[in-house]
Length: 277
Image (cartoon, rainbow, N blue to C red):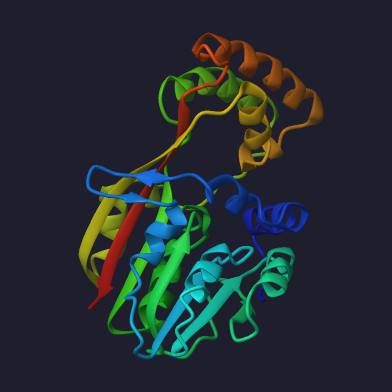
């Protein structure tokens, strides 16, 4: 791979230390929109892939620990060819240990894929596009590897937490981030809005569809905090700042606890589908 940017260097370090963090966070939470329900946000992407016995090649971009690839492999279609790409060796090591041997895993950047032009039927990506450098080059690569009329589907972040917990947490988190966190800027802001993604995809893709998904979750305060420590913003804080944030966050969230002590919240994501021209 070429030399990594500061953001890529941090992401590679994070996923070396905490492989599987993304699937642990999202893999077991049901996803719902105004039109459908899915077993998870990963399952929403699986449903974008035709369930057919015909030959089909699927590429998972930023595949992480292989959670999405495993769901696809579980279909057990002999003509289904699966390829996973990630720049984290730690994630790829976990994926290799859990996936069938026929799944191809490549340590590469999304901006420079070795995959043959026009060789892929579906490109999928889960919670990664909004983190990537040079997103226009990434989208060019996706379009290059797809066959004509090939499908692209991605899940990206939409909001941090759902419900009142979001504002309660941000009120205490933002000041601490300004004081303590390193000045890394993740990805391209256009990936976080429908307008921005339409702008990015319109040249090479058609039939754009957007589906906002809520991943409902009712954790105890300590469960919520433990999950938050595995997010990039909080991971980058110093230990004293984390300790201060934990105290402030638990205090800010305490009034949102239900009679059983749990907090009604979750994660907001967006499913985007498009077809290459």
